[in-house]
Length: 500
Image (cartoon, rainbow, N blue to C red; front, side, top):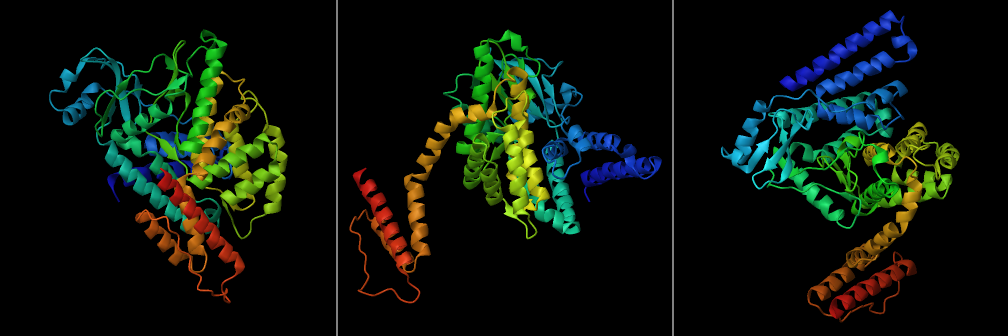
């Protein structure tokens, strides 16, 4: 076991010993039955273990289906804030990544008061040599090694739980959840990936009036990222009265619309839009910062999520239950009828509620709770989406709590549906559908090869040879129609290419 593994085991071992002592003092029921002291101890242990464990705790805070209420409340308080370390610990990183002449890149760096301090990095206010104000994000020395070791430890723990509780793992796929989290956090350990995320996000926000992303100012390295300074303060510390009503609601609507676009069309979204990562200032667009954690959604899952939200907006609990079940995996003991009853009772309570009365992230996790209780395994990306939804709501609630998420979704529905339609009717998707039909139908593979040869040679002559044969025992009229439909679709694609 690595030194990091031994340290993690020691922290968890001490936590277990304290829990046994608390149970003994309470006569067999720790904390007198409410679990508050135990939950606080677990939260403090996760904070002491660093960023990966903090992110795991934050994701677990969106899973009331298997996390006790007292622990949920504590996990929601998890923040990656640590005591700032002196600058001299970070200076070697600048020298190694930018070279010994790195001071020439800057006119000034405020090394006395970091803008932010976390277990992964510290951020400093700076002025570049050309006078541009900047924020310099520097990774803590050695943190990449610690993160790799933590990933290995967490994967091993998930495998142990899977072997020890196979029925639990059938419904809660912990290894898959961790895989989604680790993929999302790739930019946390390599700032070149975070810079790439920022450039993509900046392009996606070009036409959004009230939202933007900081610029990457210097070529990033693995451990140093220099970006433009976001004006204003965290939305958590902002005074709503300093903004006009149009500004407040504009920021809230644009932030929601951008996240919806990410969830359902781009399938690429900021996975950690908590209030500390949204900076606002009167007269300026909001800045969404810290792009180290980015989520991705598979196409079919994102379409199912659109349908799920449509069902909520339409007050259709039965439709939501059906969509959610198809998006996941019912276990052999699943109670589908009970799940439909649960969701039919839940949906009317959340339709058209404003953020003052609705936490949509909690609504999402309420569906998760019912699904797990009824034996339905939900998609592992739902945990990350739930975290992002919850963070988003928390950020917007500080500035404009009167907004309704379902109303904003309805306002953006036209854009979302037209985007999905364009995608579905695209040439690439049509070609894929044609090939799937041809391969599925008897004799279709040979005909598919013929079409591909025609396409490669730009030959529009479509040869269909039936040899006068009648359908045999394994060739039905249905499959013949499928093949003809596929060939017609492929011919249309070829004709479109030729016209171009």
